[in-house]
Picture 1 (spheres, one colour):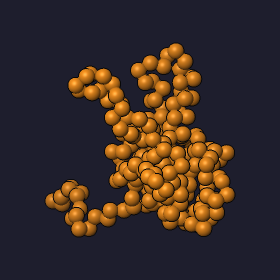
Picture 2 (spheres, rainbow, N blue to C red; picture 1 turned 90 degrees about the vertical axis):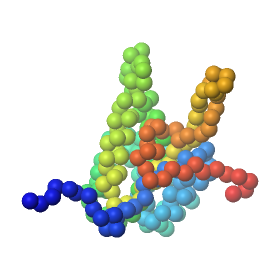
Picture 3 (cartoon, helix red, strand yellow; picture 1 turned 30 degrees about the vertical axis):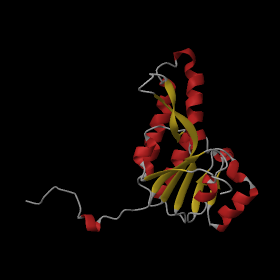
Length: 193
């Protein structure tokens, strides 16, 4: 009888491409870094990469650009694009997505729809559902994936005083995303670099 075990010899397992996130304050270089990866398909929910120097760098990297006017702030459009990248032949080797605005816009629309019925984080449910769908497709891609997120303050309770206080920084996106990726980097500018 043949075994039903599916695990592979670790020496034969292909690690694939990197799935990562960078987060920082504005202007540190997340977008520029993403365009250093090979042949990026850049989904820009913020619109900042439509500036000429980004477009030129993207062109030199043999990349492509999907901006706000193309649906980059709509999760359904983004999911369609990622599904196409996962199922069609194409020249792209990297998927880069500015994720904070896409995620937060989805929450904002649901807050408007729910109005006073928005209790216990109900407005986050569609955005989290969409993030889970996106991650399912991301893991099927034979591409590098780079999420770019804004930075927000992380709050916690001081065990001595019991007061709420700032304890660090975190990406301004679904808090479980970092656990789904290979690497998360907080970028910081110190001095002139």
